[in-house]
Amino acid sequence: MVLATYAFLAPQLRAISRMACEGIYAFAPLIVRIAAAPELIGGGSIWRLEAFVNGYYDVASVVDQKLSGSAQGCLDALRKEFIIELGLDVTYGAYSLASLMASDDQDAFRLFIARFREHSFECDPNRYPVSALVAPDRFSLAEVINRIRTRPEMFLGAKTLTRLRAYLDGYTLGASDCGQDATRSFQPQHFSNWLRAKYRFAADCRWERIILFLRNFEEGEALKLFFELFDEYFAHNPFGRTAA
Image 1 (cartoon, rainbow, N blue to C red):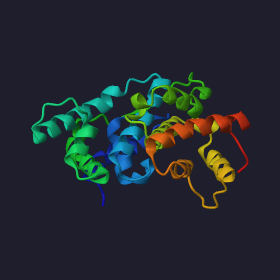
Image 2: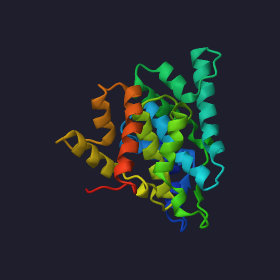
Image 3: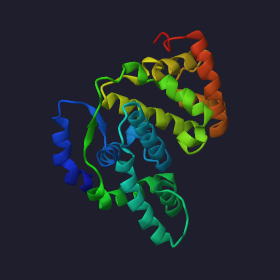
Image 4: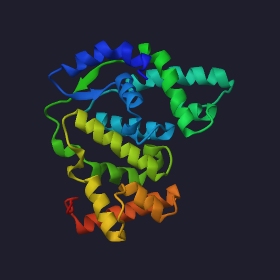
């Protein structure tokens, strides 16, 4: 179903697509993209959405853009609405409140998107160009992973491997929107291939699914194992690459 929000923002998005420069999107068009194609974040999930958006805007810190206000205006509007409906005086953010109001993770995602449509007019529809002076090697998944390992809850919201994957996917898309390849330092597909060879997996599974399986789908333990395997992988593949 075509989103009402997309119809509202379509002229702006078409103008954006004609811009000669590349850059990261403000919050409104980013959510429109995700709502139209939830597979971008690995499926409709409020926690994947939060981690993906956080990862996407991690790129903003690399290109020195001040986009936090773009997202915060929308999130504050949603948060205030959720608090009034719940009748609670809490400090939770919009993602957590949507989860509290919904029956499950997927329902919370649908609720968030539905309410976002109602508030999209308050959000910044622009795209922000990247400085040509930013060195491509500053866009590095390997560096992001090493930052996350020191304080995973700060970056991911919770210590889960599923959120890590969403965060990295968001960062990768943000870098791609800037015309950069964040996977040169760590190629997820090659890492998946290495894991399948190491553990003799015949199925074409993504790296996070293999690691979750190895830890009986216990997210916290799977995240710990990921960092161990990440170090082992780089010990064998110092440039983050292995045979396809």
